[in-house]
Amino acid sequence: MSTSGSLHGNNVDGTEGSYLDWELTSQTPGGNYSTIQWYAGWRFSTTGCRGLRLGNATVNGITVYNDSDGGDGVHGFVSGHNHRPKLQTATGSINIPHNADGTKQFGVTVRMTGFSGLLSQGSTIFTLPTISRLPEAPTKPTFSNIHLVSVVADFTPNGDGGSPITAYQLGYGLTSSADTTTISATPPQMVSGLLPGKRYYFRARAQNAIGWSPWSAISSVMTLAGARVNVGGVWKQAVPWVRTGGVWKVARPWIRVAGEWKESA
Image (spheres, one colour):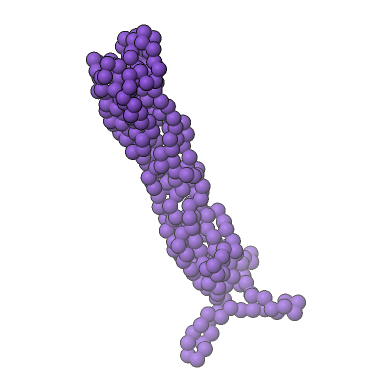
Protein backbone atom coordinates (compact mmCIF):
# COMPACT_ATOMS: atom_id res chain seq x y z
CA MET A 1 0.00 0.00 0.00
CA SER A 2 1.22 3.49 -0.82
CA THR A 3 0.49 7.01 0.32
CA SER A 4 2.53 8.50 -2.52
CA GLY A 5 4.16 7.40 -5.74
CA SER A 6 5.96 8.36 -8.94
CA LEU A 7 5.52 7.21 -12.50
CA HIS A 8 8.39 7.88 -14.89
CA GLY A 9 7.79 7.62 -18.58
CA ASN A 10 10.34 5.66 -20.56
CA ASN A 11 13.63 7.53 -20.32
CA VAL A 12 14.92 9.50 -23.25
CA ASP A 13 18.58 9.35 -22.25
CA GLY A 14 18.46 7.72 -18.82
CA THR A 15 17.44 10.83 -16.88
CA GLU A 16 15.09 12.78 -19.14
CA GLY A 17 11.41 11.95 -19.56
CA SER A 18 7.83 12.56 -18.48
CA TYR A 19 6.65 12.00 -14.91
CA LEU A 20 3.49 11.87 -12.82
CA ASP A 21 3.85 12.12 -9.05
CA TRP A 22 1.00 11.79 -6.54
CA GLU A 23 0.40 11.92 -2.80
CA LEU A 24 -2.54 10.91 -0.63
CA THR A 25 -4.05 13.98 1.03
CA SER A 26 -7.07 12.44 2.82
CA GLN A 27 -9.40 9.47 3.11
CA THR A 28 -13.13 9.79 3.74
CA PRO A 29 -14.54 6.63 5.38
CA GLY A 30 -18.15 7.81 5.18
CA GLY A 31 -17.90 8.32 1.43
CA ASN A 32 -15.45 5.43 0.93
CA TYR A 33 -13.01 7.44 -1.20
CA SER A 34 -9.45 8.78 -1.14
CA THR A 35 -8.31 12.21 -2.33
CA ILE A 36 -4.91 12.50 -4.00
CA GLN A 37 -2.91 15.44 -5.34
CA TRP A 38 -1.12 14.76 -8.62
CA TYR A 39 1.71 16.55 -10.44
CA ALA A 40 2.75 16.00 -14.07
CA GLY A 41 5.60 17.31 -16.17
CA TRP A 42 9.08 16.60 -17.54
CA ARG A 43 12.37 15.64 -15.89
CA PHE A 44 15.49 17.41 -17.11
CA SER A 45 19.19 16.68 -16.92
CA THR A 46 20.23 19.79 -18.84
CA THR A 47 19.40 23.41 -18.18
CA GLY A 48 17.84 24.28 -21.51
CA CYS A 49 14.57 23.29 -23.13
CA ARG A 50 12.39 24.40 -25.99
CA GLY A 51 9.16 23.96 -24.04
CA LEU A 52 6.69 21.11 -23.75
CA ARG A 53 4.05 20.12 -26.25
CA LEU A 54 1.50 17.35 -26.73
CA GLY A 55 0.87 15.87 -23.30
CA ASN A 56 -1.77 13.93 -21.39
CA ALA A 57 -2.14 12.08 -18.13
CA THR A 58 -4.82 9.86 -16.57
CA VAL A 59 -5.54 8.87 -12.97
CA ASN A 60 -7.90 5.98 -12.24
CA GLY A 61 -9.08 6.03 -15.85
CA ILE A 62 -9.91 9.77 -15.78
CA THR A 63 -8.03 12.18 -18.02
CA VAL A 64 -6.65 14.82 -15.67
CA TYR A 65 -4.41 16.61 -18.18
CA ASN A 66 -4.59 16.92 -21.96
CA ASP A 67 -2.73 19.33 -24.20
CA SER A 68 -3.00 18.67 -27.92
CA ASP A 69 -1.26 21.86 -29.08
CA GLY A 70 1.57 20.84 -31.39
CA GLY A 71 3.33 24.20 -31.30
CA ASP A 72 6.82 24.59 -29.93
CA GLY A 73 7.19 26.19 -26.53
CA VAL A 74 3.42 26.48 -26.04
CA HIS A 75 3.83 26.83 -22.29
CA GLY A 76 6.17 29.78 -22.62
CA PHE A 77 9.20 28.07 -21.09
CA VAL A 78 12.32 30.02 -21.96
CA SER A 79 15.27 28.24 -23.50
CA GLY A 80 18.31 28.47 -21.25
CA HIS A 81 16.34 28.57 -17.98
CA ASN A 82 17.36 25.98 -15.43
CA HIS A 83 14.43 23.56 -15.26
CA ARG A 84 16.28 20.79 -13.48
CA PRO A 85 15.32 18.37 -12.11
CA LYS A 86 11.62 18.71 -12.96
CA LEU A 87 9.43 21.15 -14.82
CA GLN A 88 5.86 20.86 -13.59
CA THR A 89 3.31 21.25 -16.37
CA ALA A 90 0.06 20.59 -14.49
CA THR A 91 -1.28 19.67 -11.05
CA GLY A 92 -4.65 18.95 -9.51
CA SER A 93 -6.58 16.76 -7.09
CA ILE A 94 -8.99 13.90 -7.70
CA ASN A 95 -11.26 11.72 -5.56
CA ILE A 96 -10.81 7.98 -6.05
CA PRO A 97 -13.73 5.75 -4.98
CA HIS A 98 -12.80 2.53 -3.17
CA ASN A 99 -14.30 -0.92 -3.51
CA ALA A 100 -17.07 -2.06 -1.18
CA ASP A 101 -14.51 -3.73 1.11
CA GLY A 102 -12.46 -0.52 1.35
CA THR A 103 -9.59 -1.66 -0.87
CA LYS A 104 -8.45 0.15 -4.00
CA GLN A 105 -5.88 -0.18 -6.77
CA PHE A 106 -5.71 2.60 -9.34
CA GLY A 107 -3.79 3.08 -12.54
CA VAL A 108 -1.93 6.15 -13.80
CA THR A 109 -0.56 6.97 -17.24
CA VAL A 110 1.55 9.80 -18.58
CA ARG A 111 2.55 10.66 -22.16
CA MET A 112 4.42 13.83 -23.08
CA THR A 113 6.49 15.18 -25.91
CA GLY A 114 9.40 17.11 -24.49
CA PHE A 115 12.00 19.41 -25.95
CA SER A 116 13.27 18.57 -29.46
CA GLY A 117 10.15 16.45 -30.05
CA LEU A 118 11.23 13.57 -27.77
CA LEU A 119 8.37 11.29 -26.63
CA SER A 120 8.22 9.74 -23.16
CA GLN A 121 5.31 7.66 -21.87
CA GLY A 122 4.46 5.01 -19.27
CA SER A 123 1.82 3.49 -17.01
CA THR A 124 1.64 1.65 -13.70
CA ILE A 125 -0.72 0.65 -10.88
CA PHE A 126 -0.65 1.71 -7.22
CA THR A 127 -2.48 0.35 -4.16
CA LEU A 128 -4.03 2.80 -1.71
CA PRO A 129 -4.38 2.11 2.04
CA THR A 130 -7.61 0.27 2.79
CA ILE A 131 -10.43 2.43 4.14
CA SER A 132 -12.12 0.88 7.16
CA ARG A 133 -15.84 0.28 6.75
CA LEU A 134 -18.70 -0.40 9.15
CA PRO A 135 -18.77 -3.95 10.48
CA GLU A 136 -21.12 -6.48 8.99
CA ALA A 137 -24.24 -7.38 10.96
CA PRO A 138 -23.73 -10.31 13.36
CA THR A 139 -25.68 -13.53 13.01
CA LYS A 140 -29.20 -13.51 14.40
CA PRO A 141 -29.32 -14.43 18.10
CA THR A 142 -29.85 -17.96 19.34
CA PHE A 143 -31.03 -18.84 22.86
CA SER A 144 -30.25 -21.19 25.72
CA ASN A 145 -30.94 -21.39 29.47
CA ILE A 146 -34.50 -20.21 28.91
CA HIS A 147 -36.23 -19.52 32.24
CA LEU A 148 -39.19 -17.53 33.52
CA VAL A 149 -37.57 -14.10 33.57
CA SER A 150 -34.22 -14.63 31.81
CA VAL A 151 -32.56 -16.15 28.75
CA VAL A 152 -29.04 -16.39 27.41
CA ALA A 153 -28.74 -14.82 23.94
CA ASP A 154 -25.78 -15.74 21.76
CA PHE A 155 -24.61 -14.47 18.35
CA THR A 156 -21.50 -14.53 16.19
CA PRO A 157 -19.74 -11.50 14.64
CA ASN A 158 -19.16 -11.39 10.91
CA GLY A 159 -16.69 -9.13 9.05
CA ASP A 160 -15.17 -6.29 11.09
CA GLY A 161 -14.90 -3.86 8.13
CA GLY A 162 -11.11 -3.68 8.44
CA SER A 163 -11.19 -2.19 11.94
CA PRO A 164 -11.42 -4.28 15.15
CA ILE A 165 -14.87 -4.65 16.70
CA THR A 166 -14.98 -2.78 20.01
CA ALA A 167 -18.54 -3.34 21.29
CA TYR A 168 -21.82 -5.19 20.77
CA GLN A 169 -25.43 -4.39 21.54
CA LEU A 170 -28.59 -6.44 21.90
CA GLY A 171 -31.95 -4.86 21.21
CA TYR A 172 -35.14 -6.62 22.30
CA GLY A 173 -38.81 -6.12 22.96
CA LEU A 174 -42.26 -7.69 22.83
CA THR A 175 -42.80 -6.82 19.15
CA SER A 176 -40.67 -7.43 16.08
CA SER A 177 -41.14 -3.87 14.85
CA ALA A 178 -39.32 -1.96 17.60
CA ASP A 179 -36.88 -2.51 20.45
CA THR A 180 -38.01 -1.41 23.88
CA THR A 181 -34.61 -2.14 25.46
CA THR A 182 -31.04 -1.91 24.18
CA ILE A 183 -28.14 -3.23 26.25
CA SER A 184 -24.38 -3.61 25.89
CA ALA A 185 -23.60 -7.26 25.26
CA THR A 186 -20.77 -9.77 25.23
CA PRO A 187 -21.92 -13.00 23.60
CA PRO A 188 -23.21 -15.22 25.12
CA GLN A 189 -25.18 -12.60 27.07
CA MET A 190 -27.53 -13.28 30.00
CA VAL A 191 -30.63 -11.11 29.67
CA SER A 192 -32.75 -10.81 32.81
CA GLY A 193 -35.73 -8.80 34.00
CA LEU A 194 -38.09 -10.36 31.44
CA LEU A 195 -41.74 -11.30 31.96
CA PRO A 196 -42.80 -14.95 32.27
CA GLY A 197 -44.64 -16.57 29.39
CA LYS A 198 -43.89 -13.78 26.90
CA ARG A 199 -42.39 -13.90 23.42
CA TYR A 200 -39.40 -11.58 23.04
CA TYR A 201 -37.77 -10.50 19.78
CA PHE A 202 -33.99 -10.01 19.74
CA ARG A 203 -31.41 -8.58 17.32
CA ALA A 204 -27.70 -7.72 17.60
CA ARG A 205 -25.19 -5.28 16.14
CA ALA A 206 -21.43 -4.59 16.33
CA GLN A 207 -19.31 -1.43 16.54
CA ASN A 208 -15.83 -0.56 15.25
CA ALA A 209 -13.93 2.73 14.98
CA ILE A 210 -16.15 3.85 12.09
CA GLY A 211 -19.51 3.21 13.77
CA TRP A 212 -22.29 0.68 14.31
CA SER A 213 -23.12 -2.15 11.92
CA PRO A 214 -26.64 -2.75 10.65
CA TRP A 215 -28.82 -4.77 13.00
CA SER A 216 -28.85 -8.53 12.53
CA ALA A 217 -31.87 -10.51 11.46
CA ILE A 218 -34.46 -10.86 14.24
CA SER A 219 -35.07 -14.07 16.16
CA SER A 220 -37.55 -14.72 18.98
CA VAL A 221 -37.79 -16.73 22.17
CA MET A 222 -40.59 -17.34 24.65
CA THR A 223 -39.86 -17.26 28.37
CA LEU A 224 -41.30 -19.96 30.57
CA ALA A 225 -44.61 -19.41 32.31
CA GLY A 226 -45.16 -19.98 36.02
CA ALA A 227 -47.48 -22.96 35.48
CA ARG A 228 -49.19 -25.21 32.93
CA VAL A 229 -52.89 -25.91 32.64
CA ASN A 230 -54.84 -28.51 30.68
CA VAL A 231 -57.22 -26.85 28.25
CA GLY A 232 -59.36 -29.25 26.23
CA GLY A 233 -56.78 -31.98 26.66
CA VAL A 234 -53.89 -29.74 25.61
CA TRP A 235 -51.32 -28.54 28.13
CA LYS A 236 -50.64 -24.83 27.79
CA GLN A 237 -48.42 -22.38 29.61
CA ALA A 238 -50.25 -20.36 32.22
CA VAL A 239 -48.98 -17.06 33.48
CA PRO A 240 -50.04 -16.48 37.10
CA TRP A 241 -51.54 -13.11 38.01
CA VAL A 242 -52.13 -11.61 41.46
CA ARG A 243 -54.34 -8.76 42.57
CA THR A 244 -52.40 -6.05 44.38
CA GLY A 245 -54.18 -2.95 45.67
CA GLY A 246 -57.07 -3.64 43.33
CA VAL A 247 -54.76 -3.99 40.31
CA TRP A 248 -54.04 -7.31 38.57
CA LYS A 249 -50.30 -7.85 37.94
CA VAL A 250 -48.17 -10.67 36.54
CA ALA A 251 -46.83 -12.74 39.41
CA ARG A 252 -43.06 -13.15 39.50
CA PRO A 253 -42.08 -16.42 41.19
CA TRP A 254 -39.53 -16.42 44.01
CA ILE A 255 -37.68 -19.40 45.51
CA ARG A 256 -35.88 -19.91 48.79
CA VAL A 257 -32.15 -20.74 48.38
CA ALA A 258 -30.04 -21.39 51.50
CA GLY A 259 -32.57 -19.55 53.60
CA GLU A 260 -32.71 -16.52 51.29
CA TRP A 261 -35.61 -15.68 49.00
CA LYS A 262 -34.57 -14.92 45.40
CA GLU A 263 -36.52 -14.20 42.24
CA SER A 264 -36.70 -17.30 40.06
CA ALA A 265 -34.58 -17.16 36.90
